[in-house]
Length: 164
Length: 164
DNA sequence: GCCGAACTGTTATGAGATAACATCACAGAG
DNA sequence: CTCTGTGATGTTATCTCATAACAGTTCGGC
Ligand SMILES: [Zn+2]
Ligand SMILES: [Zn+2]
Ligand SMILES: [Zn+2]
Ligand SMILES: [Zn+2]
Picture 1 (cartoon, each protein chain N blue to C red):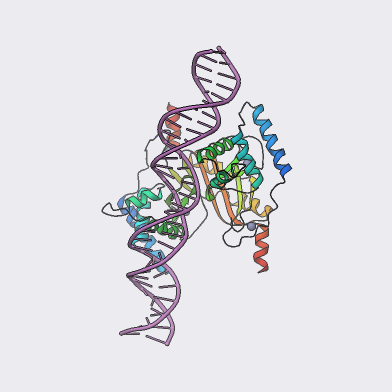
Picture 2 (cartoon, chains in turn purple, red, orange, yellow; picture 1 turned 180 degrees about the horizontal axis):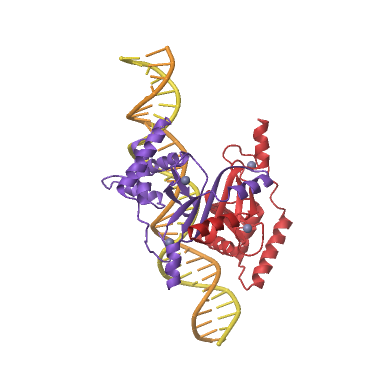
């Protein structure tokens, strides 16, 4: 996923158990809300959780079938739309990728720190909601949703670059 | 460009003279800096300035030739890359569109307020660099560039909605 | 004039996303 | 229990967005 250096000093993708737990929790929560957590939706969420980092839609499509059979694009895009609507996943527009939400809870404003070197991302809770809302109010805009994505280098890649 | 209502209560695209003036200023500035403001780059900037709102790349491609002849995609994408690098234009990732910079000056962090109804956008000068940089620093990230895009309704569309 | 770097032209293709329509599952009404 | 409407899926095709690759050109510096 990186372009300059391609370290994969992952904090490690989550363990299978951790994925199961998150998946079950999401399933329980949304089912309780009267939503239908269908197999396709669960599968896409499972793939996102297991990746632990942003994933391209067509990678999800390729990995969808347990047996290696790809899904049809609309299957995955529909699931992503649902997950995003429910706050379980986010689209990262600047890299056209999708990531499981690490904050849980219902739909919310999110901001991302993205390493251009290794692809690692960190979701941070809207650090600029205040400033942005103020700017929007001054301009007379009503804001519904925000895209906040900061690109740069994660700590590991920064250290690796300094060492060189 | 809107999807719900498609008002085009433009603040009016800039007058031809205003476009010429901006274009000449950009030309003079970059030429003074030793950059090559070639016909293709000037033409794309002219189209962006004349639009006065975000434009899709393939719309630029279609409008490129004075006589209605479209350009080849790389021609326009290369010009856009140059203009963005020089701070004369911005890519708005959440809508895959490009817009002339309204702040002038060299490359800079920008933030946008985007009306989902009519497509109007306002570029606001990052009052957010502070908050975001702080969050990034806390997480150990070095930030190089940011994407900040707020979606909602412009004043005109909000008023129109309230009247209904 | 020669050279290298930057820019352009052109062809082709890769990557991302959605339209359209038929079909299916399911909960609530009658 | 069956009808019925809404939401979810399956499937095909297509559309939009963006770039790879390579040949040819321009232009300033030597
Ligand atoms: Zn989140
Ligand atoms: Zn990194
Ligand atoms: Zn700007
Ligand atoms: Zn509007």
